[in-house]
Length: 386
Image 1: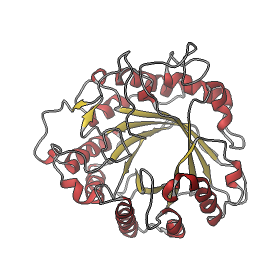
Image 2: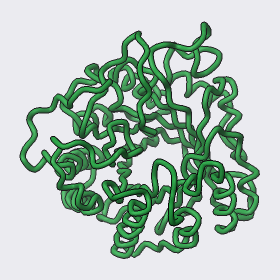
Image 3: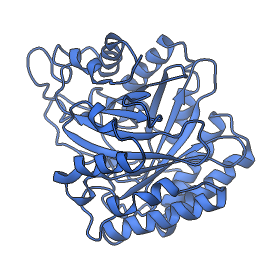
C-alpha cells in the first residue's frame, strides 16, 4: 500500500522528524511571503511543540498511529487562498504525539498549547471551560488534541484547538458537542447542524481573532453529489449548485450522480474517506452558522498527485485566485514528482464565511515516513488517515 519516501538527499539535521518538518515549514513560509526571521521563529516553534518526538530519527517507525495523516506524521500543512492576496500558511500538529496512551497524549497537548498561548498572550479561557468534557480520565477515540497555527507576519500566529467529540465514547459524541456548544453560549447551534454520520472534531479559535469561531466538523459517507449543497445551514450562504460543482470538480469526471459512486456502482480503485463539512458559529444570539466549509479527500479520487494538483489549479482559477504559489509549495514539501505518488495533496476545501470572499484550501501532507504509490485499478485497502 505504501512505499518508502524517495528523498535520499536529506541532511543529518533533516533526518529527524523535527528537522524534516521544520525544513518543510521554512520553505513553505518563503512561498507564503513570510520574512526569514518569522520563518525561523515558526520553524523553531514547530520543533518545540512536537517535543521529544521531534528528535526521533526518520529511519524509525512513526512515534504512534497518529490519526492526523495517512503515514502517521503528526504534522500537516495547508495553504488558504483568497482573491488578490498571497496564500496564508497553516500548520496542523499533534503536540502530544508519542505519549503513552490517549490520556497522556491529551495532557501533554494541553500543557504545550497553554505554554505557547501564554508566550503569545493568547487566552485559553474557552478551552479551559471544556476540559472536563473532552479530556476524561480514560478517553477514547483516534485523537485527543490537535493544534493549528495560522502563520502571519510578526512571529505570532493565530491559534486553533481541535478536540475529540468521541472522547467519552462515540455513542456520546453528539451529547458532548451539544453540551460544549451550550457552555460557550451557542444554545441554538446544535439543532442547526445537518445530519452527519459522525462528529469528527470540535474546534475553537483562541486569542486574536476578529470573530472567534466555534466549529463543528461532521463526516458524510456516500452522500449523493446533488445533496451536498444542502448540507450548509449558513444563512445567506453559498448556492447549493456551487457546492455541488466544487465537489464534482475536486473529485473529477469519475463522480457520478451519487457523489462518491459512479453511475455504474462503486468504483473499485480506492476505499474512500467521507466528505467533511465544517459549521462555524460566531454569534451566540443567532441559531445558524456564520460559516460553512466542504472538505473533499481528493487523494481518494485521483490516480496521482499530478491530477490532484491540476484540479486544485483549475478551481483556484475558477474562483479568481492565483495558483502560481501551488507548485512551489509542493516543491517545498517534497522532491518527488507528483505523478510518483498519491496523498501529498490530501484535501481540497471550499470555505464560505460571512463578511469574507470564498476561500480555497489545499492541504499538503508531510510524507515524513511513507509515500502511497499511484492508484491502480485493483481494489486498495483503506488507510487510517482522517
